[in-house]
Length: 307
Length: 92
Image (cartoon, rainbow over all chains, first blue to last red; front, side, top):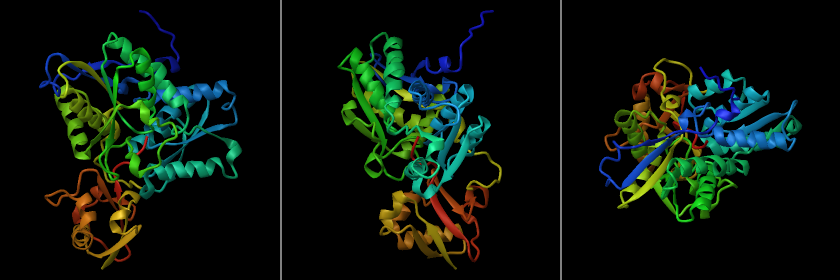
């Protein structure tokens, strides 16, 4: 038996591409549609990548170390990633999240030992951003290093260095279209930069919810929210808007027809990717499946949901 | 009785910018009917064509998610308030 002495940090990334042959059954044979299954990351989502890069870069710059807690706002996946990596590296983690995120998310980050501060659910993730900024500039500021995933260039850098490289290698350099949802915009911005360095003709398509009131957790309706500082509108060649119900329905189809239980943002990304693929006579379309459906399933027991 | 309903930021433009509205209701179902009557554009965001609450719309009665009470049949008592939020926070 071969023992691989990898550290947790080394196991981030390297996720598989799955051909979506069932939901893509109507596509011509020359059009290939793939989902990159980011739930295979040790923290369970694509956010392990930017969280690792953000933390490692901060340690290298001497900004993070003993006695300083990493602080950031997150509706879940980034928080899980920070909490996991923080536990593995001995770094204290403080997370601001709206109190209406799923119980599963809250339970997981606390299991890793992270501290949680709740923001008002009526103000959504922008409310969490604002509360984190208040704390980071308040009387306790010296205790914290504000990671600021929405502005930190290490976020898109993670995708430029890892996500793009993996997609390029795993498609044998044949990828023609990359489709992903916009949340912090790190995935689109960074993966686009990386892919277009390999091949400037790769088309990048960004997916947003079609309404400011939506149920596609992880995605942002940019027109109605704080636009992340890392967002580079030139990174995508096209934008698509997806309805919440279509995204939820596709997430169900992916589970039942592909055996891929994914979150709702992944459903929305695949709706977008199919729209792109259906316009092609040939091509290789890759989209990101950010996380697993496990984090979205409500447990059927009566309990308080809002603290 | 009169019940106050907290409105999430994304929907405030549909109620003249208010963070809270008031309707007469003795159950969540009646509150939704009240919203339909007085704030039709808001109602359109909350319920589908069949009048069912959209899957990702969560309503709290005080601190309890109504899915863990009696759903839209949950009774409202004097002093209760409702809050509407999307099932998510809209971020990462």
